[in-house]
Length: 102
Image 1 (cartoon, rainbow, N blue to C red):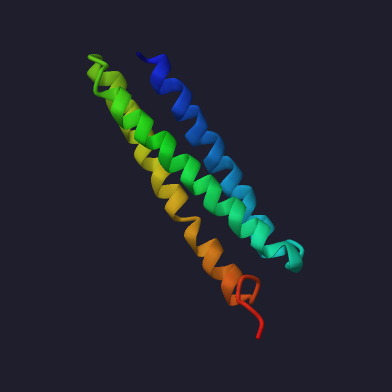
Image 2 (spheres, one colour):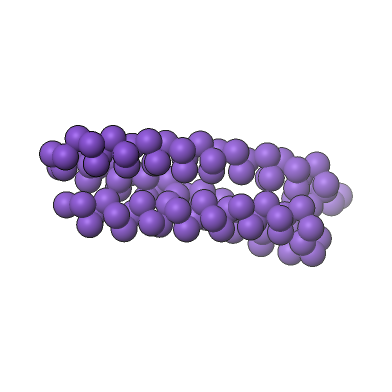
């Protein structure tokens, strides 16, 4: 059952790493591609959250409490780091990247 946790944990790690890059893109990217960047950020957050749900469900089937505790700590940190990506969306909006033009 550990494999059923390892794969979504790796997915969470990859999403978090990509989110860090997305912050740079959101701040410095081509203005006309801002909606693409915003969509990418939202999809990465959704992927990270979905993988986290898989971790939660699969961890219930593992009896090694030391392993599940390590996973829970890392999973919580990855989720917290992802939530910290939200300011990148707000910064993009403040820069009028995602604000509709009238």
